[in-house]
Image (cartoon, rainbow, N blue to C red; front, side):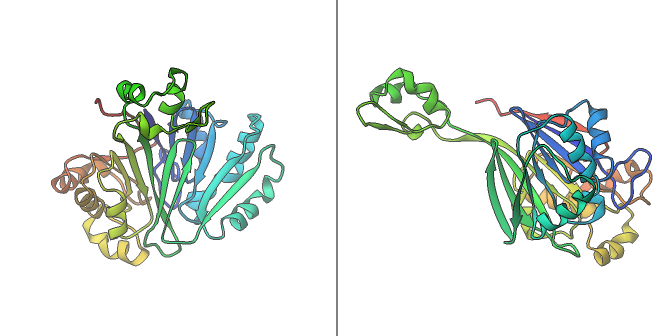
Amino acid sequence: MLDVCLLGTGGMMPLPHRYLTAAMMRYNGSNLLIDCGEGTQVAIKQKGWTFKPIDILCITHFHADHISGLPGLLLTMGNAERSEPLTVIGPRGLERVVGALRTIAPELPFELRYIEIEEPEAEFLLNGYRIRAFRVNHNIVCYGYTVEIRRAGRFQVEAAQTNGIPQKFWSRLQKGETICGEDGTRYTPQMVLGPERKGIKVTYCTDTRPTAAIAKAAQESDLFICEGMYAEKEKLAKAKQYKHMTFYEAAELAREACVKELWLTHYSPSLTHAESYLPRVRDIFTESYLGKDGKSTELMFEDD
């Protein structure tokens, strides 16, 4: 099971009921945070979630509405007696930018480990998450992220018995471990596991024009969280000028990528009555929903 929560859905500036951009995922005791706009730690508290298990932070880009909440969050994590390292992923220059923000949060009881992305695409395996970063089209370097929870094949007792594998090794092989027996025989998970089963996939992107890379990355996602900066059709020119998306462009990407569900986020401060635009969005992609602060879901593995 993967928990997903939109902590903040605003763009550019916070509003009374709309914090700035952030989303969190929880899996197997480890939390992954994407972006950290102003108000992120307040939103986490309001949700009833905790700071200490945040092990991975993915930054899309270095605009203030996506990263300005970081110093306070780091201090709060430190005050929660965190000692484990925090891995921070983001565009080139990440360590320099975070280092500058840490001028007001210099003393932390845990290590920050930086992964700077320089290529158009990159992939990381951390804490059970398979994270794929893909470059999008904004006015500075910006990345979207696909987060997957992979699911191994079902354990096959007959295969284990046929291969003469001692039963004491079965559970370790099922967890993906390769084992060398006392007689030197090497046992691998492939010897006892069936074909890989469908996992869980979430794709998140903001601050971009529509691109083929987004549709490719989001293909068949269980959840596609995508910016809808503007809903008024007359603001398409503005969206193009500042390299953002409209509700309708996000819906077209969702349809192209054959995702299960679309959540719109990162609204312009000028956007009011967003719900009035939803029928037209659903004419393009039926399973479209408005994101709101605190909106969450539990994504489950499919039954075999």
